[in-house]
Amino acid sequence: MGSDAKSNEDGQRFGLDRALGRVGDRWSFLIVEALLDGPRRFNDLVAAVPGIAPNILTDRLRRLEREGVLVGRRYSERPPRLNYALTEDGLELAGVLRLLAVWGATGAEGGTGHVASEGLRHLACGSTLEARWYCPTCAQTVDEDEASNLRYA
Image (cartoon, rainbow, N blue to C red; front, side):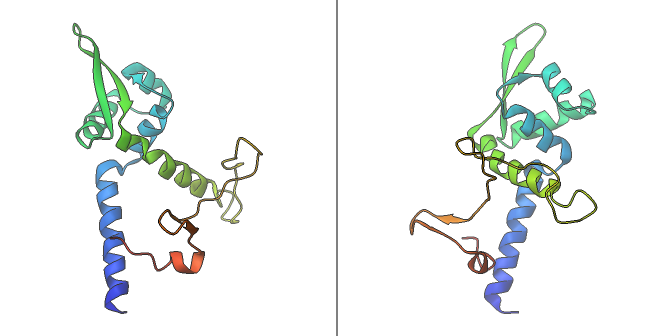
C-alpha cells in the first residue's frame, strides 16, 4: 500500500472517528432527526424519539449542545425549561442522516441489496434521488472510479 493510500485511509478514519465522537450513537442521531422539522421542547422530544429514557435524552442533549450541534434556549425561568433547535452545524447533518437512512433501508429485507423503502424522492418530478460527489470549482460530478481515490484535505 502506497503512502498516499495509507494517508487517505488515516484521514478517513480520523474524520469518521471525530464525527462519531460528536454524535456517534443511535440516540443522538434520532434526536437530530427529530429536530430537523424545527425546535422542540423536552417532552416533545421524548414523544418524537420512542424508547429513549429521560435521563438518556438529557445526557445526549447536553452532549450535542457541547458539540455545537444544537442549542437550548430558555422559555421558562421557573422551573427552567428549554426549547431545543439545531445549529447550522447540526443542520448539515440532515444530508448525512438521509443518506444513512437510505443505506439502512438497503438490503433490509434479508440482504437482497434492494431498497426496502421508497427512498428519497425529488418533489418536482417524483424520481428517486441519488447522492453524488460534486466539485463546485470544476462544476463536475465525480465518477465512482475517481470517488474511491478521494482524499481528505
